Length: 276
Image (cartoon, rainbow, N blue to C red; front, side, top):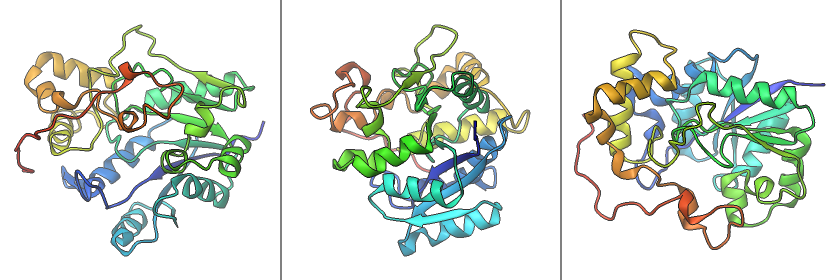
């Protein structure tokens, strides 16, 4: 089985809620740098590609990729499915991973676990840990074969399918052999714990976690974060108001496989914490 793995990390500077979030600093590095460092800790050999837009504002991400020694692909600003496919095609992928750039705390062990499951069951077109999700939000792993991605690229047309890359696949289980990996603890923290970045409070949470754990062990785990939050519950509270908030909330009337309990609306009034 051909198995050249390409991890495509979609990144951009434009963000309605938190502009430039992937370049925000933590411990003297950008969030993007810290995240790709964690991706490089997986045991599987993989090529990591930063996929950004052709907009001038994203030139900084090209320079950051170059400084990190990572290849970069530039494509359509809005059609992320096309950008994902073209990046995978350019770098000769047989197996493609989608890891969002807003997951800087992602646990390399979780990525390895989903990859192991994918390769041990070589009949799958697509495997994720999101349908349904069980790990804390921000440990998102989606794996697909290149033929699977190509089929989505050829057939998807809805705006949400183009913007979010993979919905055409997991919304059409009759067309693809789909697998899912759940947290082996039997717990479900997907709606209660938020390790992703979209708001200022998320940045403060992630910054605090890195400051507490990174200098002790750069390869800290999801369990290490949870133990930290159990010990210091005040850290959990930094962004707890956004736990369970995700993009599904905007498309519940369109998504067939997503239930209302898998998302929630964002609080109307944002907290006023500063980026310090």
